Image (cartoon, rainbow, N blue to C red; front, side, top):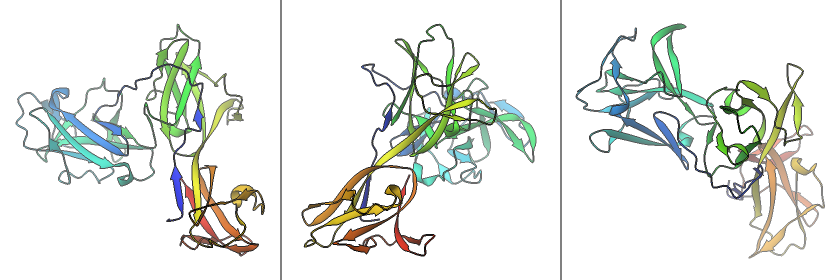
Length: 322
């Protein structure tokens, strides 16, 4: 889409203070750096390998490693596709773009040694799940990777819970992690707890779990009723979008209108910069229809080939915010 430039903005940074926050990577087997998923394997982290479908484990000590492969439900558990790069005698790494994965929130994966043996994670690793086959639980575990939402010190949403200094464990849970009760552990700070997440634009519900007790965010008045007749806290993560019309340099008046402003014909007056008409606004995630009004004439975006009919039979340009 040539005429729409999207810029991530920190719309929902809750209670920003002077606290310096360093996000720890607590997930075994991977980390997220910018727009990449970095799979990491250190042979010292694994004590056992398994060979057959029943998960019979063997000692990993002094195992002669020829290659390491990343295998998971994102590549149909292939043992010979995603080869890792050897960094040194103990460490291997593989980098993949986040866009290589679909919009699923989580994935299961494992490391394969020499295209044959599965490296078995420890039961103490925070992101493990018991492996299954045909609905039957096996005696081994897989690692889980989360790409739909993840902790990031440079993320765009900061969650902070003030008080509860004597709590031992505080967790953030919500629709962005399918209400998982353990993976997003919050970090203790002065006068409370916090965690920073990278979240795509959209509407999310969430709660805090303080030493096993669920509670709403006391500092966020935006709440919605849940299925239990109680309340969840709610946030709307947005993104700044710049619309451009690279035509009509001699026009006197150009308006941006769309489903995001109820097709208002006067509100979003565009500005001409170097013969290009522009207008920026903050938008919620999802699909939006729009048009330009050039000197009272309605037109679709000539540089955007993505168009759809609306309920009235009108054809509009489409902007996807995600």
